[in-house]
Amino acid sequence: MPASPFDTHEVANQPPPFAPRDLWTDDTGLREAVEREGGSAFAPRLAAYGALAGVELPRLADEAHRDRPRLRTHDRFGHRIDRVEFNAAYHEVMGIAIANGVAGLPWHEPRPGAHVARAALSYLHYQAEPGSSCPLTMTHAAVPVLRHEPALREWAGKAAMPHYDGRDVPMADKRGVTIGMGMTEKQGGSDVRGNTTRATPLAGGGEYALAGHKWFFSAPMSDGFLVLAQAPGGLTCFLLPRWRPDGTKNALRLMRLKDKLGDWSNASSEVEFENAWARRIGDEGRGIATILEMVMLTRLDCMLGSAGLMRMALARAMHHARHRMAFGRLLVEQPLMRNVLADLALESEAATAFALRVAGAVDRAAKDPREAAFARIATAIGKYWICKRAPAFANEAQECLGGNGYVEESILPRLYRQAPLNSIWEGSGNVQCLDVLRALSREPETREALWAGLHAASGTEVTFDAALESGEAALSAPTDEAAARGFVERLALLLQGAILLRAGHPLARDWCASRLANGRGATYGTLAPGIGLDAAIDRILD
Image 1 (tube, rainbow, N blue to C red):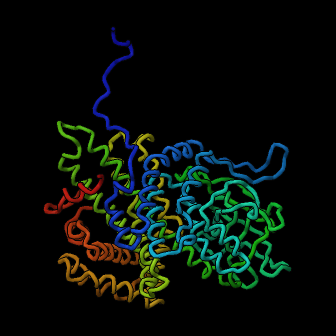
Image 2: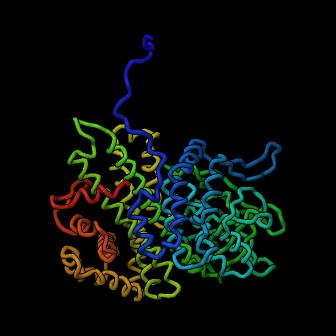
Image 3: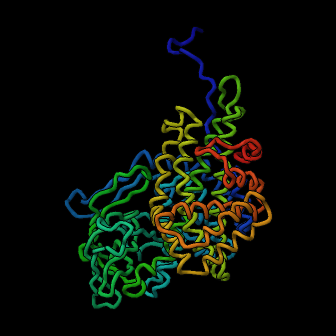
């Protein structure tokens, strides 16, 4: 039979599809970190979610990203509805994630290791569908804040439950709810003390009417929102629900959706409050103090998200390099490509170990004051450093695929667009660095916990010891704000080295040699001779 007139060539030298994959089984570093930090009792659940995150969730994510959320301010009859419509795949993703504990596992199953397991679930989920991680993170982190207010016990209980209900109905009609946030305003940004939204007390005791706006209103179809507003006693935290307790729609008006760089499956909006009903959480004037517990958890998720994004970008690059031939050899056999892949692997493994170490500290914080102090300072350091590393990492992984990495079907463009988000959300890099300075100067227990963590690794590796000794005087002294980034970067590198060394991580010495010694180039793929490329590459994918 003659060939078709359209058969111009044979397709060859293209890698097979990445999926199906098991993101838990593939990731040796994650499995080791979960066991090390006390979450091994949850391994079967993590294994099950790793399989979902490697097959089913990416398919749903593709649909949710192709069909972006749409704002409907009115129905066809002219009634104001302020509703954001999502692709059905988005709701499926949310249902799967919440049912599996990505939001709320430590609250509805409070036992040792639950925070570590939940961190691993978040890390796995982010690799498959990062957009939905925004409402999942906020719902998870809001629970301890809601628990502080007796009148909101039902809200706290339902936010902790493994049940998702995407309907726009009152909280009383749902088994589970989701929580969003509205902190920043046009004139203030990170400086929330400059908020102008006013909260006027009502007769009910603890009830207020809010009038004003929010410039970023995250996950606007959530059932309730934690917001900051100026009460008579100062900046105060509130829960503002979509529906009032009497079953009527609350007076929040969605003005428009943000046209974002990435995060396309999820919506962010601008909103105005027209004397919207809200319930106070904590005392008047204590708004920032009230939400601090939530902020630490959301910043940890920024670390986990960036580490997860790095991991997926690296896995895609490695998959391509294993199957693509160039100049007579597979890419993974090319010496310079091996240097790049090994360098990326060192970065990814250190980010994962750091993020899970902080999750372990959070897990142990209630019973161990030193771990609580460590979690406080390490979260700010890690949020700055890991999130800063993600964009360049994603671009380098993209380059491993060449032109294919610039095409949407490779997923790398989605990861590249997503990569800057976590360095901006929940406090930009400057905010994190200033927070580190503030904690070290005002909370001496954080300094003690940090130094204890660093010195616990001394005597195990000469490069680390030399870096710690040379930097100790500078790191112990008060730091000028203008030099805060360099200060925090140095802390982050030493802390990552200490975590890897204390863990007995097989890549710890190579990581220290590549990050703490002199002579490294400014880009990935500049590992010096003598650093073990094979060991790092062999751990990327099973």
